[in-house]
Image 1: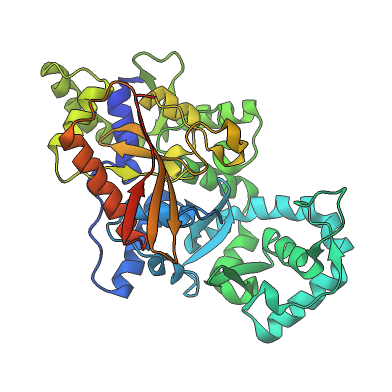
Image 2: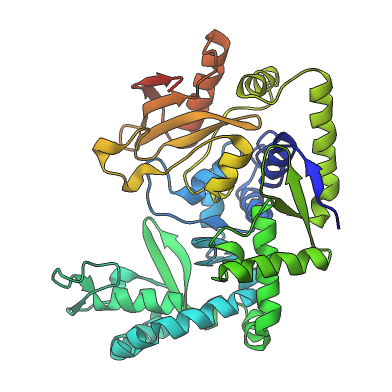
Length: 427
């Protein structure tokens, strides 16, 4: 099959379309139940949402949903775990995933059991104690498990004194090996429950019965849907820890079988791939791109910015560092011409844009970054840096729309006041 020829603009608009970031955010539903269903629908659309405990404003999973749902509140997501509609496990990293996908993660669970076998056996008495307490009293937070024993978690400095509570390491190993699930949250505390009680029995039976090949193929298809636009250099390709040749072979197999299609992009040497089911959706964006060309609207940042300014229904959006659309930094640079690095692990003196800099999306382009901090006690949002890319005219209309978007962001996340400490225009 011949590759589909397209442009960066058409392909990135397909990507944003699939990611729920091209059209205006969904309006907030009018009841708690409807808001939870709305959050669940977005999780299914994205195939999963990455979890991260860092909370400069709110954790990544909440910021990801808030970028797609107007007026989003965390209760919409938090209510899904106790009802067993989602589960937490390793996909792109730790993610919240639709419960119906539980069986296809069995190869990952088997691999984790192999990798942690020695650590589990070394901690067996504590693990049995934790499982027994969960059977009697679960779900429970980690603080409910008492232990005077301190051990080295694999996240600890091996040369320092042991400081991790033995029961905490046991819980982590039990979650990784899927004997225990995260069944909810009470504040910042995770609630742990036995998988045998949390996961529906029919899904546990399917997990036991599923073959390796069937599960791996289903996982590849889930990855394709999650990424929307993909290529095999991604080391996390398929979420299966495949070697480079295995990644290339998987794509070739799905292209030959008609599931995926190669895309040749004007201005890029290496191809990308999409699901063949998205060909018609891409064609719509190609036609829109051709119409912009006929009008003489060159694909550059200024024109994209002007188009976003003309459409009042499209607010500027602030995208968290671990949002699905940012999972591939290579794709971000290839299709958007935007370089992004999360500087949380960069020494403070070497940071350019800030500890939690969030890319700013306007229409189909990223136009800058903002580095926010939420003071929950004062209900105040501080933007430590508001940075805009070169080539943008920061005039009154642009400034008002951007500041309106920041005020909406602040209110959505519980702030009543907002200050911007520093601007960096064209830097």
